[in-house]
Structure formats: structure tokens, C-alpha cells
Image 1: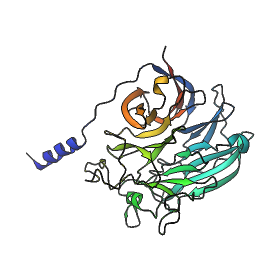
Image 2: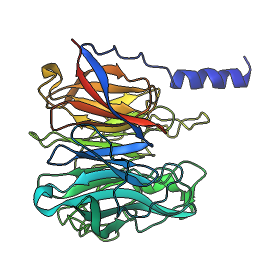
Image 3: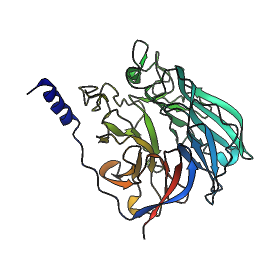
Image 4: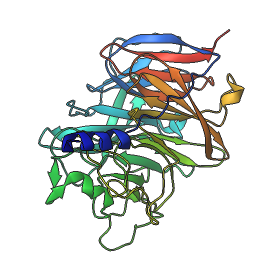
Length: 376
């Protein structure tokens, strides 16, 4: 047998396709609105309306009756809308009804020098006022990949912010591949940060006072987290993150944990070989679930609504690839099953709305907001 044949067989074995999970039953998707250009995130206001971010750099208001305001909200920060960059997550301060604070994550800079940033402003009379940039990655990178950028609020009004590893080979930083920064404590690439409301590092962070480490780091060893969710009862925090070719992960996030990327992973380079021959290590937190082939996980929601009682306490993970949402069946924090909700187009975000329905944002030039409702 020729050497190339042996190599191909080995590669196909390493990337063995897992059987697709069964289709979930008893649901259908209805369109709430269309006309969104690559929407990235949604956040509901107390009056039932919502804010939707569009990656090219616009923030849109959706009225409670489903009408999309044709005029974007003014006062959004200038963004780098190239590649995977742009205006990304939107989240309301937990006390928004009193202080009117909106938090935005985004890419800023140029193609050759860019980073993930976080800003806040007050939403007053349909516009953002008093814009403040609270955080920007201290290090810039080139190319426009892997910004991470999900925001998640915790009980104490601190927030988690995911930062991507900077991108794929051949992108380099500080003498090596930039993705290797995910294992370094003197870098924010490939990390989840925990910040106070003003963007400063939270003093309870594991390395807050450690010499040679960045004070904002909450966890490390991540590739590109674009989904963060929290169980409001138990406080458990979940993340789904992209692998390269295979090896997408669902993780439970705990302070100080190392999730391995790129030193410990089952993922492969896009051109074939394994990224690492190490698939587990004592000091690395193993994923609860892996997806091979990659589904390109996006938004993540923890469901507690009334419309689907059998789904309560489960996670719903969007998929940019395959055009679906995965229902991850949890029992006391343990994955016991998986189903798919076929949407038919790229899914960017999944959220539970204030009405107890699941909502899905589709990633397209003419993107839509969908509501998941019982069928029949």
C-alpha cells in the first residue's frame, strides 16, 4: 500500500464521523422578523423590546410587537467589520431598569493590528450616550479571526468575557503560533476574563495577585468561545467553543481551570494532521461533550421556560455548520443525551426570551430572528 494511502486511511480513522443525533420532536420555528444583516446577538429590554447587534457595526431595536426599526441606534463604537470581526455581543447591566447601561463587545483596530474590546453606554431616548471603552486586549494581533467575545453576567454583577486565541496558523505572535498564547498566563488570548462592571479585573480571579500573570484571567486554554450560558439556580457556567477540524467542545467553566487548547485536544489542522497527540492530561479539564465533525458552535442558552417542560434544565447550542441547534440533555450537570433542531441555515445565537420561548438568530446577509414554539 502506498504511503499516501496509509496516511489517508489514518486521517479518516482519526476523523471518524459521529452519527448525527436524532431530530427533536414537537416544535416548529416561526419568523419574528427578517432584514437583519449578519446579526450576532440579542438582548431584551424591560418593556419587551430588544436590541440586536449586526456584525457590520449596527445596533437595531426590535419592538415588542416584532417590528424592526429601520433606523439603527446611534452612538455605537467604531468597529473593525472585517473577517470575523465587527459589532459582536450585546448585554444589559443586571440593573438596567435603573441605570440604562448597555454593554457591547466588538473588534477594533485594523487588519494588521486588532483586538477584542468591551464598551458600555446609556440607552436614553433611543440612542447610546456617554460611551466608555472599558476593556481592550492589551495585545493586538493581525488578521481578523477568533475574537471570542461573548458576555455573561454573574450573580455578583461581575461579568465574564471570552477572548479568542487569535487565529489559525500561520498567524504568529511573540515568536510562535499565536494560538499557543492560550496556555500563557501573561496573555489574554484564548482566555475567559472576569471583570468588574467598570472593566477592571475582579479581585477574586485566580491569578489576580500572581506575578507574571494577567489579573483578569478566569480560565485558560480556550480556542474561540462564542457561547456562554449560566444556570440561574445552580450557578453553573457553560461554554461551547470551536475546534479546528473536529474537536468542538462543551465545557463547564470553573475558575482557574485549564481547558487544554492547543496542547490537549482531539482537533485536527484544516489540512489534516492532529494538532496534538495528547488528548487528556491530569491538569486539564476534560470537555463534557465533543463534536466531530465540527458543528461550529455559536450561541448557547440554558432553558428554564414553561413552553417545553421536558426541555427545562437543558442547554441549546447553535451551529453555524449544519444549520441547526443542538439540545443537550442534562441531568444534574451531566450530559445524558443530544437531539437536533434543524433550522436550515447558519445559526449565530440562541437565547431564552422573557416570554419563556427559545429564540434563534440566523447568520446571513438577510438574517432572521426565529421563535421556537410547540408544534400542535
